[in-house]
Structure formats: structure tokens, C-alpha cells
Figure 1: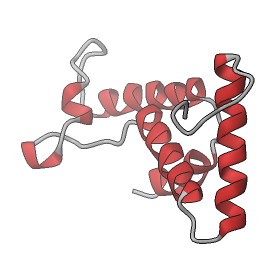
Figure 2: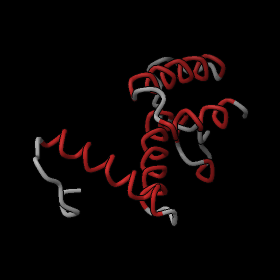
Figure 3: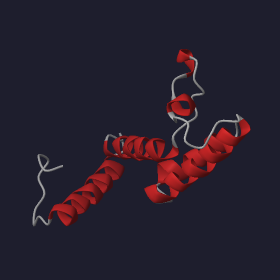
Figure 4: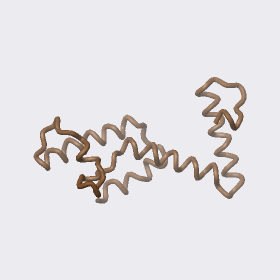
Length: 110
């Protein structure tokens, strides 16, 4: 119950690459299956499925880290502080230009 909230800051900050979060998922999944006496090849849907459907509802770190980063970026881009939103816009524009090898980036590109 304390593990996932403790990792949320690292997810939001993008402190670790997605491959690291996949390793965390693999590690957790292995030991949860052992604890439940499930075979290693048992479906993962039971582990990650919705609790309201009778499944375990374990957070999927690799997916949650992507969601947290998008959420943080959106909050920075829509910040009421003009300096913060401008800085975020410059950062995402540079990222898009680098990724797609563009000279100039328009709002449509982003």
C-alpha cells in the first residue's frame, strides 16, 4: 500500500526511463504470482484488472509513469503563471523539433 504512492514522484518527474518501470513491473508481478501460488505463465489480466470486476487492481508502473508525465506536462503548459507556461512551451517545442528534425515548430506541430 505504500510502495506505489512513494514511486509517484519519480513517475511524475520522469526520473527513470520506461524500461526501468517495466523491470519494476516484472519484479512485482513475479512475487505477487508466487504469493498467490499462481504459475508464472498465468494471465496478468487478473493482477492488473479493475477491482470492481473482482480482480487485484495492481498499478502498472510503466503505463502509470507515462500517464503521470503527460499529466505533469499538461499542468505546466496550462499553468496560470505565464513564465512557467512559456518555459514549458519552449521545452516541448525544442523536443518536437529535435524528434522530427524541424527547423521551426508551430502549435499545429505540437
